[in-house]
Image 1 (cartoon, one colour):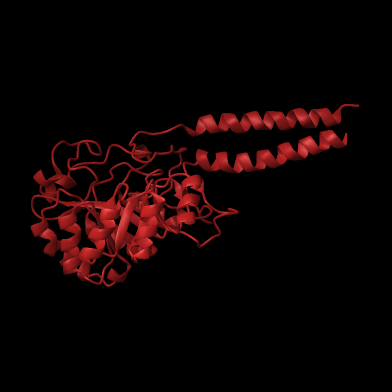
Image 2 (cartoon, rainbow, N blue to C red):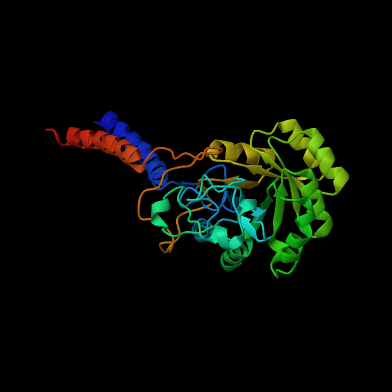
Length: 326
């Protein structure tokens, strides 16, 4: 009987752990805390294109969810319309995310405003969603206390950076901004215009040469892909070049980054705590799916995880029946 009780206790503990993990996965997010190796407040988590696992990327609902789930920052991608309005779109064209076709730079803002977001996680929960402007995104970040992490896309004309700098400089919360870009001319150009705002070179993964570039051009740091080599991390740290990491979508890689001393992480689906105490106003009612790093396709549905939980419950029921036997 003692042996059977020990087995049951082990299964119950296993079920509790698995149930917590699978429930989070069924919701489309993975909660980092509680964790034995990642104490709360250790990390600064940034939602990649907003909390894009629960709402279409780079939309106001995704950024509101990032705020409601307690993220430190919200990352976005910006480019310009033909009449100079800064808008949020990851791709150079609108084809993947909207009901339109063509380059973002070929649309006037009025023309772009006529399009509707028709792709992304749980888009059906957000009918009529439009492509947001940079100002709208900044307003949401300010309302929720999020740090805007703004990626300037490489399609941007470097000659238009003064227009961008003027918008950002005029914001009273500009001390909370972080600007990132793969474009070396873009990131050095905006740093010259906004010397007091942290500017990071994007790398995938970064190299020692990238670290040298930051040192030579007065950049604050590098936003590197998560598979960066440990020796490059040490070289950056030795030279006071700050590091962020993208796109970190597993607890294992989160712990590895923490071991490296990288505590600024961008993620699609890791959430820096438990769910909000009140139901988020923009949370979808359907079970979301997890969007993996670098992949715009949806992952497994919540029904799969429900079946797994049901399997473990069946095991527990079997043990309970065993104890009821005479």
